[in-house]
Amino acid sequence: MPRKIKFDFANIVLIVGPMILFIVNFFPDFPMANEVDYQSSIVLSETEDSVETLTWRDTGLLTYDQYREIEQNEKYLKIERDLIDHGKMGSGTFTSLIGYKKYSECFDCVTREDFRSHKKSDRYYLELPGYTLKDNDSRFLVKNGEYYLEYPVWDSVYKLSNGEPAREGHYEYKKLRFRFVQNTETSGRKQKGAVLIPISAKTYNTFSQVATILLLLIGLALLYICIGLPAKVLIRISQGDIFTRKNVRQLYLSAWCWLLLPFIIILIQHLLKWSFHRYITADVKLTPLTTLENNQTTLIGGLIILAIAKSFKKGLSLQDEQDLTI
Image (cartoon, rainbow, N blue to C red; front, side, top):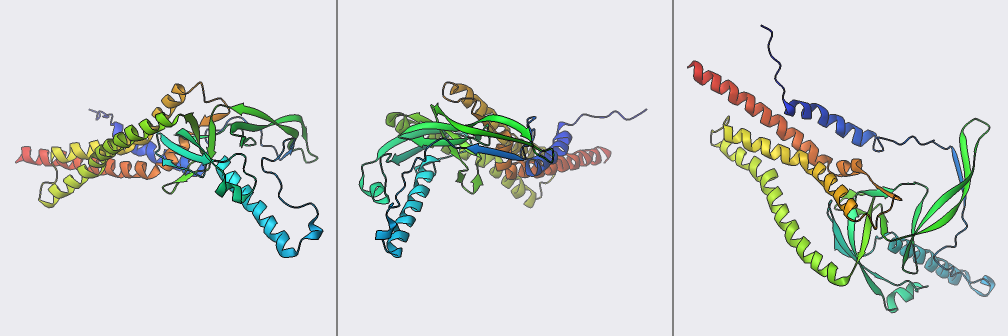
């Protein structure tokens, strides 16, 4: 009789898992929308810069050192303003699921000294990670405490002499109800972006306390399942208990915890997006592959433990057969 093929979901995961890791690392924008790769995109900006120029017009009255000092101040001010506008200055806590942040901002400051001396207003946010701007040519701005998206409007599309597509257009503004943080980096992990939902100081204080307790409890549970169980298996192995059902069961539990965690994060990210659909517009989109990329170490660890669990299961089966034979 031909041998009956037994379905094993773990085998499929061990095959598909490395394929997902390959796509995440070498094709981060997969699946891609059917977008034309424009060889040339010319945008004529019709907007004013959010930072006033600080360079004196009559530079002939200045020495070279004075001029360079003013020029450097202008440069540093613009850098500081860009950092603030893009949410890279502030305090708070961040996780792959949700975070909270507080910014002390000064929207009427013109010089670096203003940032130090003027009274600043505190703003509070819920942070939802895993987002990127839908249009790569768009840009998020903060002006006078309001949030805007600077997006291109393409006036003409044509082909170059070599046949490659090109386009020309101009920028327009769109007001948003949320703030967008791009290219943040936390705990050594780079995020494409995050959406910040404005909240009150009271909500911020309450949420920060509740979130801290929940994150601690969840962290301890994950630490026990993902690290504690494999450690207990190693201890039993050192005592001579190798191919046991308890070892197999705990290795499988730890492996599925490691492997499912990134996908649970992606699911919760989509649930949070639905919960805040009144704030989050179609100008931003979730990037699940970014979440998988940030958690690829978790996936690799899960695949390794799953392979070990299968080996132990096979060893247990052979041990049981040997015991029956004896």
